[in-house]
Length: 320
Image 1 (cartoon, helix red, strand yellow):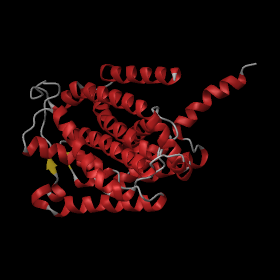
Image 2 (spheres, helix red, strand yellow):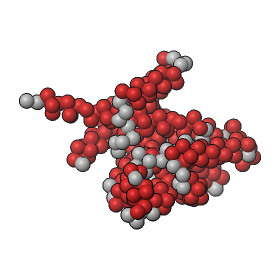
Image 3 (tube, helix red, strand yellow):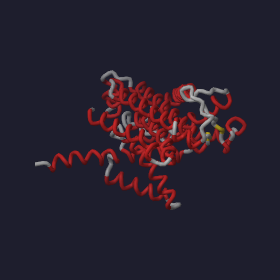
Image 4 (tube, one colour):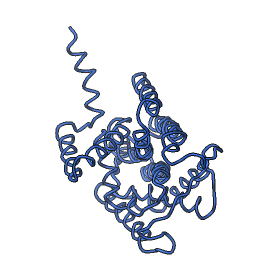
């Protein structure tokens, strides 16, 4: 607990200093990281703590982005906080009926059902052009944050300044909330369901209800992350919902280490930096990322977080 708190505080301090010490480009690069990190906190509640692997989780990021475009662009909401709350509620409302069906299944059946719903949502966004803009997407206008008018800022100044620190604060809040969730009796019930659902049911745990609750909470976090990613781009695009984007979420989680609370956040950071550097070097960057994931899965199944955990143990063994 103490070590995790020190790590989180040091990471937050380093991120807070980034816009001061680094060029604005790197600060703007961190905005998607913040969005994905928040989304992956929810995704790992479902995957790492409940044992349900979703192949269609990008649907909820798409709900966050398209919901922002709808609430801000169509209904005229100017407060990002109200938009964020709105898309999280919409995402939870959508996740409830889907979850009622999906959580009755586990393993590949759960994964295929979530993939099917994700692709249905993608088809809706792509085909209903007059509602969603089709392949052109929907524009997400600028909104106020904490009542601050953002019109005087250009795009780089906004993303590397006020919006950067706003997203950092959101990530800290989301991390604290998820930490409380997974270390609460609710989180203990989820782990019991993951480890042995039948035994947990015999002990009086309502397995389907807990799975459904985890699914709905993960959807809310996904929508919050999607709203941040969409705000940074300024566009809600149907590619946000495509199955390959769901695959990226799984990639980040496995890369960071789903057995560690901070693993998905590390995976989101590593993926963001790797993708940026590899794209500037070669057009075959996806091949290299795939090779890196294969090495991590085979050699370090606990991910980057597992590799970092080895250092203190190795130091302790080396001491006489």
